[in-house]
Amino acid sequence: MDELAHAAGKDPVEFRMHLLSNNMRARRVLQTVAEKAGWGKPVPKGKGRGIAQHSCFGGYVAQVADVSVNEKDGSVKVDRIVAAVDCGPVVNPDPLIAQIEGAIILGLSTTFKEKIEFANGGGKISQFR
Image (cartoon, rainbow, N blue to C red; front, top):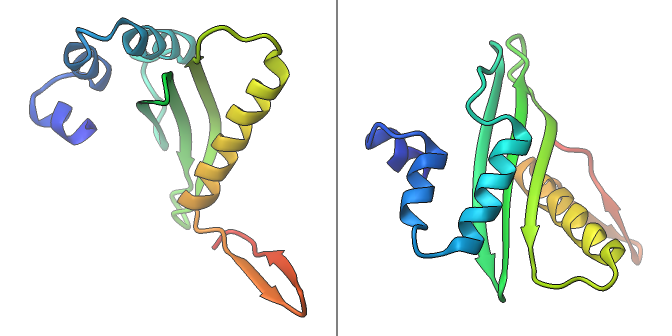
């Protein structure tokens, strides 16, 4: 989506907001996360910021990731993730918070190529490569 926004000469948030013009809940999480994360403010050299929005099963989520890149070895460090969620009425927020935090960790693990090895009846999570 960011590549399409770039090709259109638009800010990624502005581009998505236009595409979501008929979906107020999706727009609201996108706008909220952009505001809370400081979207549009300059990012220092060696740092980057990305945004994503998704909806499924009647819920809406948007996240902004602030990352740093080590210029010497190219390693990436996630400095901060900001999330906005609209899943409808919530009776007990603790399980919802745990679900969102777990999903963020799972996404980061997948991104950084975590692997699980099984041997002798057990599993071991390997370090990120």
